[in-house]
Length: 363
Image (cartoon, rainbow, N blue to C red; front, side, top):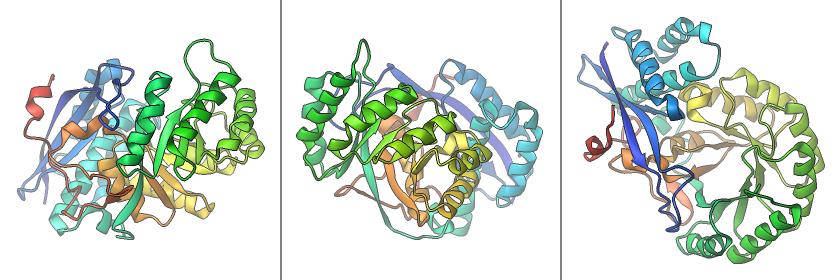
């Protein structure tokens, strides 16, 4: 089997928050680059990437350039194709646009392989579990009014979520007391039995993370995420050592090697792996194995429709972030049932682009 064609397009989706009916996200829309990879065997694979922002057109161009390198290659030889593409773009370094572009190709290769073998991605990766925990993300945003989030939390509980994530590092002139008060009210709203995560998005200093982190320990947070600059490994290790609350990070890390440095420095207690920034499915699994060797659990960032396969396939997979940014891309996506996602059993990703997707295509 040989790859004969790769077609890409830019898809612009409205940035909605459907989980608790709240205000939209911090921007009015999200732009994705999608691909369809065709073969001479009549088997197509689909892939997706984003984070381009104002550089989305540049990201699409990178996808197109790298896709030219895979024409004529055997899609079943994923590592061989990956080595060829990464080697050709090696001068760009291990991160950035080239990695994001390659991830879309890698995802499509796995989709083709699964369809050719008649196996789901999860089964190809080991088929460890057929269900996996998931947490609601995006409904308890720092930019939403306090009155909304204290109502949104119980809505998520009513929908069956047993885990959910809020945000601190509030906009404007915030104070530790204001941060603690928000955490207290959200915890009271959702009750003591919910796993409540908290994302800081790198907005605290190391000293703030230790100070405020100690103040919110009484609310028994499931984790504190990205408390400060993501690659300040020594600083993050200070926070992790100072707090009882587990520290999570890794969504902004590109490639494999930085995860080694982060883990060896004991910067995090839970490793978060972003499928696109790490460089695709093959690299995601390598980092998960590395984390397992250090007795650390792993979690996902965005794209739950694909990450459900990955987190469910590794013994140290903890939970899947259920964020709806990309849902309109696909006909069907996994839906939470009592706080868990059922792992898709259809061959490959188990996904098909929406019949409605053309109305969102902008390039």
